[in-house]
Length: 154
Image 1: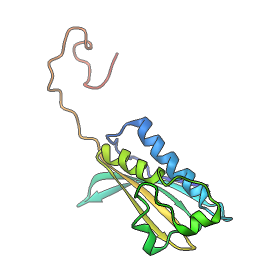
Image 2: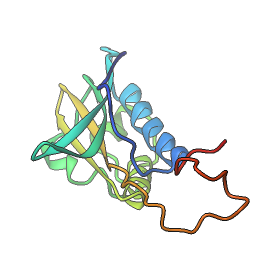
Image 3: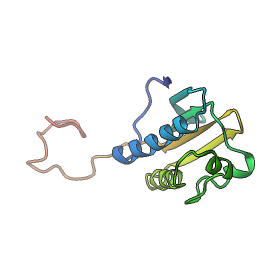
């Protein structure tokens, strides 16, 4: 297993538990469909537009059995399983990827997939960078001490 995490990544707006569940699904699939090679890479990188970071990409990649071009367009459909995978005896319901996609989209992100049959697959979760929160609400006497920085508690 390889891990590549770019330094200085910005925060993203995401539900931690839901994001972990989605990543776990992608990692489980990479192991399940990784074939005999057993190689896996997890990476996190900033995606820039005109020099400005707009999103963070979390990518899970394997060098396994891959997905054919005719089938990749169906993998996010509920209950879809490739005939080759179904016949191979690899167990699954065809619900993991559709659920991961729903979760990621609910957080304002998107999930993408690239694959070459017999060479492996790469699944990416793209999440928008968290917007800076402005101190728009009046500070109550019990919220935090006067002079405290927004977002920090004493």
